[in-house]
Amino acid sequence: MWVMPPEPSREDVLEVDQTPDDQHVHLMCMAAEPVQLIEKTRQPMPAEVGQPERYDYEYARNGTATLFMCTEPLRGGRLVRVREHKTAVDWATEVPQLLDTQDPEAERIRLVCENLHTHGIGSLSEAFPPEPARG
Image (cartoon, rainbow, N blue to C red; front, side, top):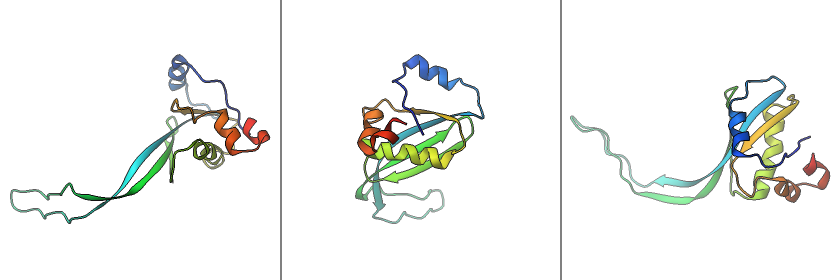
């Protein structure tokens, strides 16, 4: 069960950064980063005496993906998941998976995310039935 609090102010986020580790309340941070999927088209030129190995800038673009990176800064944990898109539903479905896989025994988790319109209760309502979305 999870609850989405109101949007915090900048001061609230800075305060969370200084919160000491608590075994009952865990701090987690989640960010989504789009990346290009590229493939090298040429082999590097081997190193020679006085010359390091050289790489060409040319590549083939094989589409894009989104990396959802979840970290636990006070505990040192990290989880990276790859998705095809970065939609509200993609973000919303990452939240329960994050909570269930990272620390299912925690009483409460503080989740710090980027300030995007897709990171909110509306996204949870779009992805889940009303009862689970409200927590």
